Amino acid sequence: MPEGALPKKQKCEDLAVTKFREYIRIRSVHPDPDYDGAISFLRNYAEEIGLPFQTVEVHPGRLVAIMTWEGLDPSLPSIMLNSHTDVVPVFTEHWKVDPFAAEKMENGDIYGRGTQDMKCNAIIFLEAVRRIKTEGQRLNRTIHLTFVPDEEIGGILGMAKFVVHEEFTKLNVGFAFDEGLANPTDAFTVFYGERAPWWVRVKCPGKPGHGSRFIEDTAAEKFRRIINSFLDFRAKEEKKLNGNACLKLGDVTTVNLTNVQGGVQFNVVPMEMYAGFDVRIAPTVDLNHFEDKIKNWCAEAGDDVTYEFLQKCMIQETTPVDKSQPWWKTFSSVCENMGLKLETEIFPAATDSRFLREIGIPALGFSPMNNTPILLHDHNEFLNENIFLKGIDIYAAIIPPMANLSI
Image (cartoon, rainbow, N blue to C red):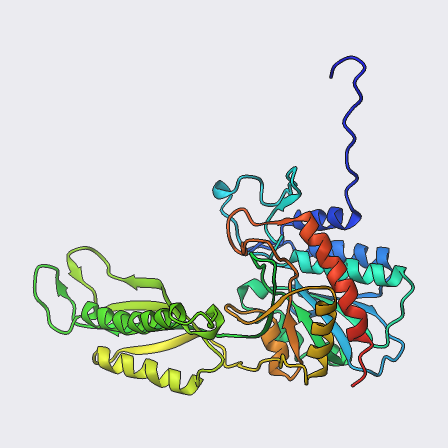
């Protein structure tokens, strides 16, 4: 530094950003998530804000954390602000920074696994509630902030267990907010339903033999036919999506071949081959009819071709998004008054919201991240601090009217 020069003044970081970065640094990453670290962080956070804190063990080693801000009329159905504590694995060699360092660039971009999916929502919820409390507001309905495990591996030992637990019943949830996706444009995406995820494993048996011969009725021939049937359907759905500007990804059914097994060595024709497909079925599709389609594909592929489900979600409930519905009318009106452009969609993947909708609780997936590339599960996931802070402003404006809604 030149003699007499003053050091450059450092901008003071917003407390909410600091807390967000602290949460990102907790390695709650599969396959061995640090749930204890996450729970400890949240317990301290609750004490700092002044919220009662409890945990519910829904499965051995799987804790749901709950913070509660009691309303003026606790008998009213409550508002649930839900987020999951786990994040997906990373491939560090493809990241420009340590994915768990929560490094902030000069332009305010914060890099880290979970910045978009979905530790951002957790801190946005907490800081919005902190602000509302600090302003001295009192809300009619009780607010429950819930933090659940295992969403990234299907939620079977997380939210699926939680919604049938007696402690969940006590929450008396009337409406829920959960995660959404970023939007690269000025608009904000709101998700009111999800596609049904099916993981289908098809077994193709056949005659074995030496690799030098033309053997009839081989597993590979059936394998080829079954792959063609699934991927021909995939091509039709892709064409449908690309040919209609009004359709979004969640409006069509996607099929992807994700797992292939078979063979013992190069000169032996295998007795069995397996094909695994990740299928995401649009909520407008009759699920029973779709399974009939799979049965027909197997029958057409050859004798004794069978299938099994590694996952078979039959949930197709959606949350109404028209102004005749009080919850949506209240939410969308606040957003309109703030000048926010909303785009409603079916979530293309799966979130814990589906378990809530299945038991009749209306839920919206809303992560207020516009002008942001969609990077969940991707390398170099990031969220700009200004977008994050704006998210707190948005939820701080949304929560009170939702909690004071009279139905």
